[in-house]
Structures are given as C-alpha cells and as structure tokens.
Image (cartoon, rainbow, N blue to C red):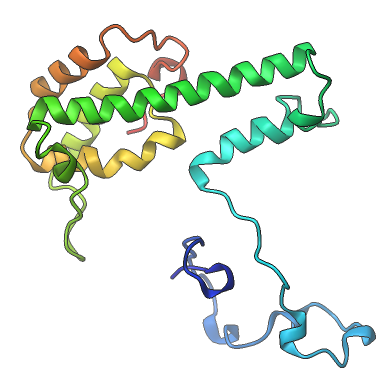
Length: 208
C-alpha cells in the first residue's frame, strides 16, 4: 500500500496497517473534535489547495544539514541560508554538505566501475538494474549479499542512507554467481586509493 500526493503517484511512501481495520472507512475528522466554524464545509473544501512538499528519503540528511545547521537539539536552530556570510558555522555546514556530496558521487561512480570490471561495460548496466519477477526473492543467497556489501564498504566506504539504493545492484551481483574474491578484487581496484577514513564502516558500522 502507498500514499500518493494528490493521487499523482509521483511521490509517496510505503504504509503498514496495524490493529483493528474496522475503523478504516471512517473519516479522521470524526476523532478530532468539532469546530462550529467548519460545520458547513464540504469534504473537498477541507482538502489542501496545493501539493505537499516532499523530498526523496535519500536526501533527508542533506535537508537536515541545510535547515538545522548542525547545532545541538537544545539550541535554537538556524537555517543555513540565514547564517551570517563568512561565519564559522556557515563554513562548517557547507564543508559537511560538500563532503557528503563528494562521497555520494564516489559511491555512484564506484558501483558503475565495479559493475564494468565484473561484467563488462556493455552488459553491466542491465545486469545491475535487473528487477526480478514479482514473488521472487531479491537475492538467492543472503549470506552472499552481506558479504559483497561488506567488501564494498571496506574498500569504498560506508554506503550511508543514500547508497542503500544500490542494494538491488549488490543482490544482482550475487545472483550472477560472483565470488567473494572477485568482488574483493574489483572493489580494491576501483577504490584502492580512496581515503575513506571518515566514511569507514568501522565508524558508521556495516550496512549489512
């Protein structure tokens, strides 16, 4: 089940249902009290006049940096764009955002190059993006999936929330019968010179 903003299905989120579903057909406003000012409003009049703002879940950490300013929770938060130009806080935030964007670009290019090394540049894109039929498991060997992800993160740095979008690519690597040694070699060749100290899985933990 998915929610959909204005029934466009261009954005939304997965939803789980729990508890007694008998109340599902009922309207939410029945449980929100009564406001005489709204007595004559129709359901359509209660709907939002414009679409809700949405953001890709992979960008949530960037949005936090931009709006929250890397300050403690008990301190008043300032938006990045409202901070004084040239201030240390603004420079700190910009540096953090820049580092994060550079690591994202590194993840994108590394996955692509590793795929090219293993499968060849002609077929790698289609192999990594293969979607299995409905009802079939994402991966045949879950131990393999954990192994290839850890091999990648050891050489190339933490996937972070952003890199989780490549989970299907790692699963397809396993489904193609790629061995641990082949994955280790490919990751080492692609990311051997990458200084991933800040993004080390020993700091962030492994994603699998």
